[in-house]
Image (cartoon, rainbow over all chains, first blue to last red):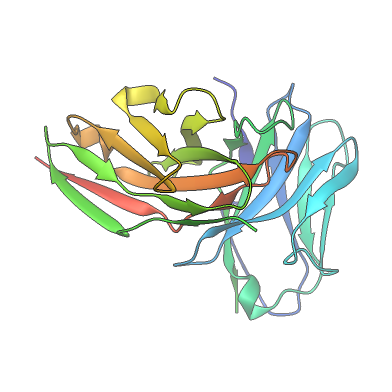
Length: 115
Length: 114
């Protein structure tokens, strides 16, 4: 069964360092998303991406964050200068279409720990 | 803005017992509602969804949920719990033209005792 894969599963970094989280969405999906969950808190929407552009982004997704689809398969989330509060589980998701079906396919998540 | 509240961060049931996980939403426009399940070390998986059709929605693994507008609720039920149902369950909401920008509840961890 096709699945969304994320790497790394866990990354520890020092505050101020750049981090890139990688995702390989399901191959025929066109819409891509990043969500995050800070420990003990709700899963929060960060950004959606379609046709090489950001479709929607939340208030969380400030200038420190960027997304990119550098090739035909990867979808990346970059945090330019990490802060302690960026420590969270980051989930990548993809969908065939952007309708309100909610049929997102999520990866297993990348846990980011900022020290 | 929409919001979701899941009552009970932890629910424990015995195998074979009824599962009831509560979800209440807030939305000023008609909502689209979803339940996702997350098994340990896995991503979130869509369990079922309400998108303005039938108010009683059936999902995978014998789960169902009923949309009750008067109560702003979308509780998840299963008549008989199985050990394999132990997982974290998330209720989520979105609205028309919001794409798949979901607002999640805090999650409920379901434990099933043998």
